[in-house]
Picture (tube, rainbow over the protein chains, first blue to last red):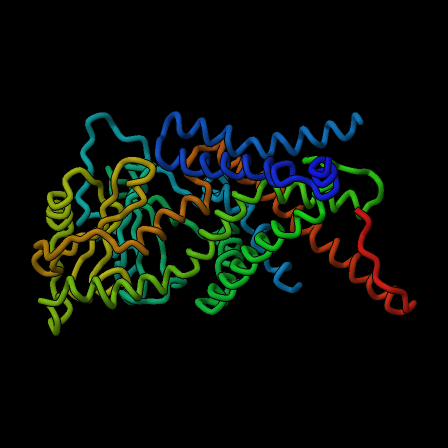
Length: 66
Length: 360
């Protein structure tokens, strides 16, 4: 019970930093993939680095609907 | 908060620079070779060098460069001295098959953006100053990560509230900052590394290059230069599975006073950035030495594409531009939030009330 209260009041490490961390690792993978491989690496980099842009648009659209 | 304004300058001038190749092409600052006749033979580089000198009388050749994506064009740099001011250099493109001049390369409006972005027309001090600003950008990002915890721990990721203008911008600042952080750190770090290029080059010249040309210490600059074609051929034999990126003439900043330095590149996106210098005697064209660049120069060369975003085709450039715009919003909203907070602070101080934490 104490743990549950604690996580509600102070947030939990994963809910705060999890999203940015996953996106950050994805971005770095994308930045490197295009450098290391010309074909598939390039396509992966477009997806990986496009993800933050797509996500920003998605959050924006969701906010409008809400 | 003055640094913030310089960061905005960097992001705003950087935006058109992402597409500088396309814009130069559109405005005619990126001359194209004529369509080569089938079976046409490329002219000798010596001939192109003579044409280049005839086109700019009274000047000397500094570098001859081959664009990776434009094999039918040869670009010649001329200047008033071999070690002349880089801003005084003239770049002209020549057709590899006909040796005809195709026009000057670079210049135009993009050069102004480039100068503003790199050194604000203030030379090396300007460059190092912007490097320091870039470093503060990295510090600001880290401090943003630390502040992210107390400010967003009760919000779910991606919350955008409409409560007030300040809170709306606050949420956008947090969201865009959080999702672009890795990209911003990489572009910031590689930008800072790039401002140290000259420092690294002088370090290489003082140590590695000095060591490579030791047997030639005290020799005067060559009187008659060796044939460029013969020199390039020997460089190719020394690094057989590589192509020539550019050749630096004796006395230019990239080599010794006595040697040609032929910088070779590989074929993949990564190895095409990792240049390998081959030093050749300026008079005989014989190979003197060839060594890989030290780690710090390799780091510089690999960091360049990661800063420019020019290594993954047009889609990557567009994504680069969008991420840059998002970073501009993060910096702009950060500046706005700071101004609002300061105004609040001031009015509180006047009223003699205790400071209230923003209610998030």
